[in-house]
Length: 355
Image (cartoon, rainbow, N blue to C red; front, top):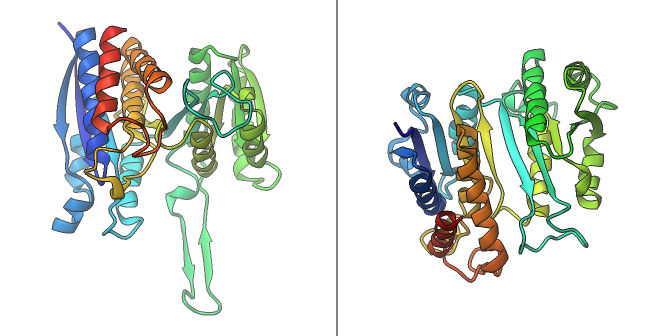
């Protein structure tokens, strides 16, 4: 009996529905080839719903989404909604309440894509960042004292638990072991200044490392990481870090792999439901113009399949994307690709069926 995956689809705002449509097109192509099924259920969470009803994410949504095999997200962000409302109310709430404690961000330069780094090519940029996704400074712990006065104090605390740190570090070691590239895991931190939080991270990292003697354990300060991403990206295999540092270095990673048009990732709960998305925003100025780049959303679909156990199909999506970047795209930028949004999706779907 062929396997059928129940996928919750949240197209979201702006160009989100357009890129999701192309991702679904490619998913259906590879599913038809591999023989598994897709049962898609669409949800209208986003700016339009909020403006119409005042509701960001109904309480019932969390329990409903737990019943799916995976979540496929387009984009969140509406020009008529104050920044932070939708992002916190949808993205962060889903990550926290579904306990998606891993943010997985492959950083890979594909052939045909212009790299902003001199003398660097696809052989130099191929690493993965494992970011802790439910703790750190993003928990919102803290507050104001005497707000709005000359004596105002603002405090925001970074919360790091042994459980949260260890499960993230352990996931990173297992991922590095499975990846079988350079068998090197780098902890990115700031032990010389953040002496409490990263004392916990460092101790946990090296304790868990004892269980993985075949993996080289490495450490680098976050400021050094940003320098080496630019100077020597080929040094890295897998990097594990906390929530805030991970947020920062993955955007730098996106730039050296060609930009937000190709960057994709997953918010993963290894024991529950995970969510996969393009890294870029909703790009409302391109909405409805059939000119936005859908490759990040398509790549997110590939990462989702790999996570679901359809690893061969996930790799085939990536291989098809690489054929498109190498042979067809003039640029990753919206309106400069030399192809329409739907044209890019058609090409990837075509190559998937031919592989």
